[in-house]
Image (cartoon, helix red, strand yellow):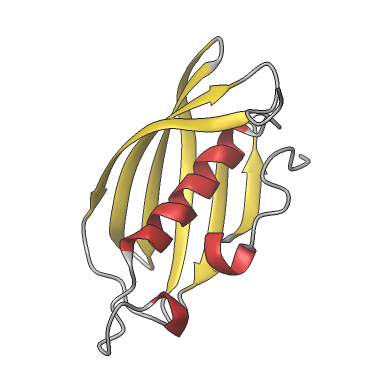
Length: 128
């Protein structure tokens, strides 16, 4: 399956797609020292959210998909130099609205859970 969305995304910051099927995806990355918020190596949650969001967009995989809202829960802290994987699955789609669940794991530990409401627009959101 070809990637139709977010083709210019920085995979270092938002993860590399490793699985793409209709309605689902898996994205992985290694957290880096640039993601840390302090000397302990705690990774900023925005980077975890970005990984999950990337997986959700790929699960929809349309050139004009955008995020409308997200209900998320951070369940465990993440440190630098940890491998994470985000698995996304479309649980419903009704016209332009798609609901996608995402689970981010570090090995067997779940570190993030989210439900993303995505919309497929008729044209790119920045087109006049």
